[in-house]
Length: 124
Image 1 (cartoon, rainbow, N blue to C red):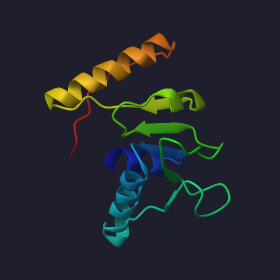
Image 2: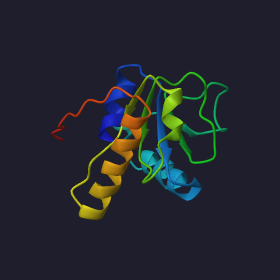
Image 3: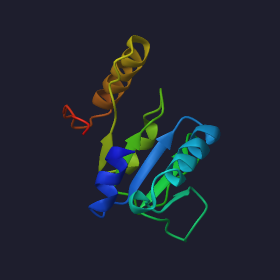
């Protein structure tokens, strides 16, 4: 949620890619669980205003709004959605199985011709 807040507060139209509908709904619910001062408008794909809020949450099988610049991939093994975005953020977790899946996604991004950059993020 930290990165989503960071980009949305800069005015970016952010898309969050989840594994499935249940994952997307759980994430949307987490956005409601923050303090009022930290709340950011968000919507699931197909809900909310015509072009969505700054934060749109979707999953495999749904198409995000056309006006998204940045995607944050929270799905385990899905990269094909990425071609619709100028920039995609993906993660390398510490847990070994999840780390291996992230390496596989990295290979898929590279094979698809994406310009890749690795950065280390220090959460406050």
